Length: 249
View (cartoon, one colour):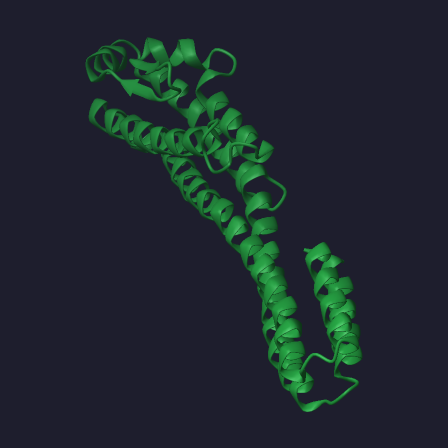
């Protein structure tokens, strides 16, 4: 972008020496500002492409946190029906979050090169695979699939509840507590999900402010150049040069 702006400056200056009409100089000056505005607009679009998936990831983590909290509440897992409902709700939330994160951070996803998205994916997987969680869940009918999602076998869960309801509740509570903890960490202002979202939001706001300023500069530059006489070229070139330096910061 800086190279293109420098080229515009040279064109305006050369136009003055060659006696180019003020209207042409105005077009050259406005073109430089339009070029810069387009570049910043592209930066905003690129940031929004990443911001939207992070918003989806954030929402899915909130659901995992809520479902995990239910698993840690004994009153909500004390019967076969309640335990089945609680773990199935958790599985639905967990699987949705897994699919969203994995899709966004895949080699062809919008967050493919984003390290924070990849870390969030690993954190999510650890909820059901860390320590003995995978084995303990399998004992009560919850299996971890190859794609990272989980499946619930209601018949196995029912048998486990009838044999040892306390053990089932302990397993659900352990996994639920880890889900709550992982979600809180990821969603915090320093977490992979919350931190990245805040950074992208700030970047979008900053670019939007810069773009608004550029639009004003573009309009003012055209009016100014058209109203000036022989010294228009120098003023326009100086203004563009100063603006190019500002945009490069």
